[in-house]
Length: 111
Length: 114
Image 1 (cartoon, rainbow over the protein chains, first blue to last red):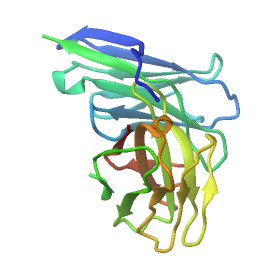
Image 2: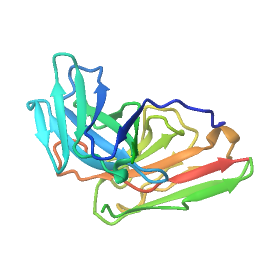
Image 3: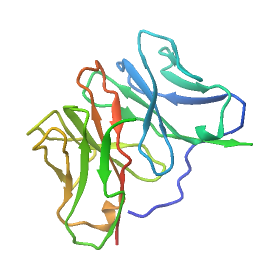
Image 4: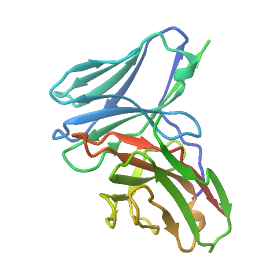
């Protein structure tokens, strides 16, 4: 197929600021969620995961928040760096053998 | 770093050619997957395998086929490539010891069919 000009949701942040990337999921039965980072020309890389019995989980410079009431997931990146520039995907598992990926968000970090 | 490798990284071929995309992992994972991803779009599962001699079709219909003769190897084949097959193909594997599916991805093969 042809490549067309696709308009990914884009978040532009200044280096050093905090970033918040949001994701809405559709299946209330989903009980496990993952955030992936995909840099240009590379495969997705695992960042952080969270189970549905948790509301918040922290990693190194990253925090994932889960709001099951409104089926919303967010990824917070503290002190965003140029190396954080990438497309970020959330994914959910609804007790099947497969992950379901959402549409990505492009994070652009400018100096 | 995940030990999962895909070759070739880039492939440009003419319509009608038969191609095989290679994927190998050295982690001993039983489950392996193929995803198709168009530029800037989400990943769509096209094939997966629970282990040797197991292959299943994914959520997105694909004219490609896969085989799983060895645990570490999960090649994808297109018998007759067409321009509509132009896309990025991502291979992944997961550790069955995980309660849920934490996937490790290869770097992908960018396929262009002219």
